[in-house]
Length: 292
Image 1 (tube, rainbow, N blue to C red):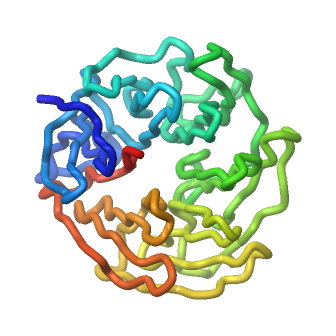
Image 2 (cartoon, one colour):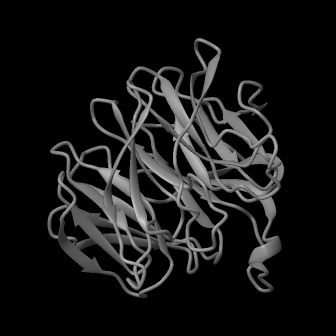
């Protein structure tokens, strides 16, 4: 069943996986997105029709369409604002794209999730800049750090409020990277963890004043615009917190735990827990989009 997107609704990437026998090397299921209302009550489910793992979600501010990235099936699926599945996007290539973020003008950036299967003599671009409205797509040359296991590319990202800077990470890696979208050039990293630091780089979100919130697996750090860690909020259980999305109001953020299937909303300044939700499925909860 599916229903129209209404202001305040949450859309959760929550692939219909079997979490009783988990093999993360071959982790897949029926592509599914849970549709919650503003009170976090289930309104319906969206199905991509693909078998893989839905990782990243993004809402086009112009059309209201939702785009679901599934690097396992190498598809990006579009859902119209009334909840109907329009099918796989023809603009983006069949590649392991796992993240997508939109700017206010409707343009988007899409990142390659991993370089698994990449041909050494003809590597797939790892970052794309485009517009569904204008039917244009441009590959960009952005650096990666490989993440915790060495094969991840651009797994989590967000854009500055003026739309000029992309902040991104390779899952569980060392670097919080930046890319100047307008100048088409790499910028110095905002933050780099030491090799022996137990924290990893996961979901980032940038505030209006330039501070960046970032999940680190077991905590959330607040990073100043000049790259200093200002604060750290440890979150229980202290592993699995991978996705952080700023709420549209700007005063709170959503934090999701892939390993446990837990979703939390926390205050931006204090880190205090405001509400929580369990989707009752482990090894599934990934991206999140809030309907404006």
